[in-house]
Length: 108
Image (tube, rainbow, N blue to C red; front, top):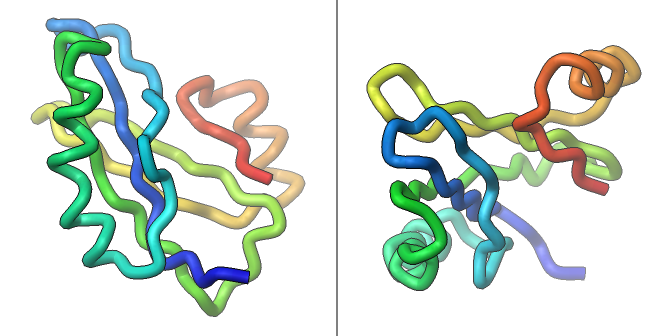
């Protein structure tokens, strides 16, 4: 089993940033955070025609945690920056995300 240290999240948005959606990353997982950061600009260029605004970030995966189920939560800040975290799922998180955060992705 390969060790995953980072996930590449790519998001495409409308010109006014009112509507955003995840875009499929060409390579979504990396063995080092540095590899992810190095590939991020290339991956963004590959998807630049998918939306008016394309943003990407590498999300650190803590190797000490077991991610049988995890939630990738992301948001666009008021200053237009893409932020994301990977959190282990708890029964509370599943209920909250099913009803309150349509931008989150449930990973299994």
